[in-house]
Image (tube, rainbow over all chains, first blue to last red; front, side, top):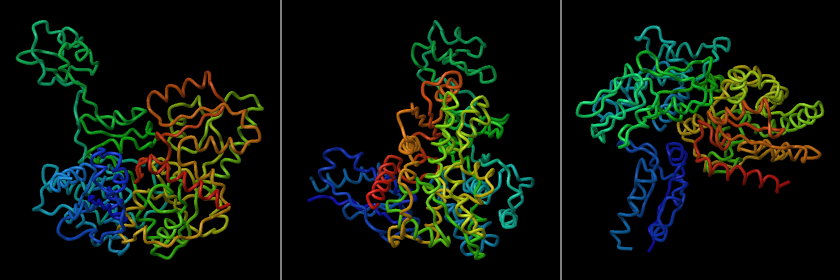
Length: 86
Length: 472
């Protein structure tokens, strides 16, 4: 089983820092790369919800991350690899 | 960067709703409500910073302020009435409220100091600035930043702490005033935008034309967007979708500046051949505005060697004005440098940066990915699209001239203190005969206002250029 990493490609996410996430795969270890499948997805419709969450959004497995960046996503991938003992 | 884009987006939204004057004073409060955790000392400080950053977005210098009580709504009112003759050549402004006035001296004693008996730092200092008690201490009033103490310390206990904006400026245009706050000396600034990217406090802002542009559209004027070749790599969609998205903002027409780049290539190639026949030693390109500013302000001896051919933006604007005399021309730009070029170019009315464009899409809820693909101009030679990255201009000229072997090329990708020294040396003896200069490393895809990662963008621009060639 692979963990899917869905990067929101909506314009708000992209402008607010998501553009850098396009290089995510370059920052993953061989082990991480083995366990994940990275996809760019159309707008996940979470843009500016009123609960203080902000773009860019990334969905790792079934965890929705706001204000995502490469480091945060990497940590979450590691956590899920451990949890699912992949 | 994120705060700036959020701010741009909010200002654009107010302009779209035509409620700028009524609602702008509330903006800093909305962005920093009282009970939220502040990153700076408190929400009041952050609101003050946001106020002055908004001032820049309305097209003002922070130094234009004469009364601290003047509200943003008053500036908004003035901005809505502003005419071209009221503009100044200053394009960058320091938000003094945001500037952290980093360090007074670059040399700092760290806690690795062992207060050793020999005290080499004390003896190395020619200004008597160092005393040692339980640790070495540098008297900042005496220190002249020579760095001798750092060299002398056997424990590497003295560190050099750079000031990001000053370190990034290739011409020494940004300096501290007597209060330690940075200011930009306009007589030296070449508008490369490097300080703006370097400052982690967001203290340097470029002045914007958002008010003028959005109001012109809302008043029903015919506004034409002229998009820089680098735009093709900015959003992960094809150029056709980009054009549709820009039109959804209300632009009447979208023209690729690559069209003007073809004309620049043609004329620059002819000019090069002529100059060589006349026995001139070398010629440099002229499409990078920061490079032209550098020559004008710091290297007058280089002037005779800079190409007289106008930039792609100018040719494109002439084309637009010839076909649509009543059009308002807006250059969609990767950098602040183009703002300074527009100031001296009557054919171009306004500039909107890539970053502003992206934030504006956000304000209007336009999803670029979901746009339909518009038709592209197939008359453009794709070499013009490659002006976006380093070596693109050179290659384009080489492809145009009859015998490219006469070109001995030199490509300068990124201006810094070292490359400026090299360029100065070319006036006396130049190892080539055609010099391409781009202020940003890698070219316009790495401009100070870009959104995409420059490597990803370069690839995408190149793919776009190739795909259009194949279509022919």
